[in-house]
Length: 274
Image (cartoon, rainbow, N blue to C red; front, side, top):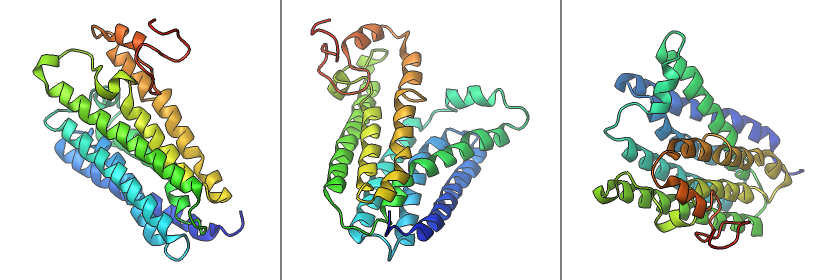
């Protein structure tokens, strides 16, 4: 782990926390003004972008320039696309039912409860998950096969996430498919192409940090946490509970992989056609 600038990286952790706090507090102020806390979901991608940009500036003179620029660009492309997508999806809608249910139980001020239980907790999660984005920019070594493999995996993830989101948006906008289950395009191969894409993006960013044992060790928590959230936490399970009663969903589940892409009707571990 020699050669990794631990002192400069430790200072960067503080700068990153400050960047996240600024984004989340600004979002909180806007949400209170509009009376809609679903805006925090838009801030998720913006906060990661802020961390990447602040780290790129702070790491000047420490890490490899190519890696610093690469990680910053990849994180910003992912984060800003996601923010724009969520903003468009929520335009014209009221409060998110998840936040409405949570805030209905608030002991006291709903806004202060949202600040503690939504904004600050989400900010802490952004800071934690962004560790490979931060650590990678302090790796002094030139990029190796790990970094290029990570970039390729990131690209696969962006494809699944962006295309999957676009396909679902078109499906929902079509009056002819209203109330039906989306089973077209990438959604034929996995019930959650957008979540699978997110999974690939964060394992890809982690691999870019793996040219140093120190940054790999620091950053490993990120893809592990994201994988848990997407597969076992607030991602796949929560959405599938919401969709369970929709007509045709059980049949869709029976023929479509739950997470990793697989030919329809041939789910891993099951004979074809079952």
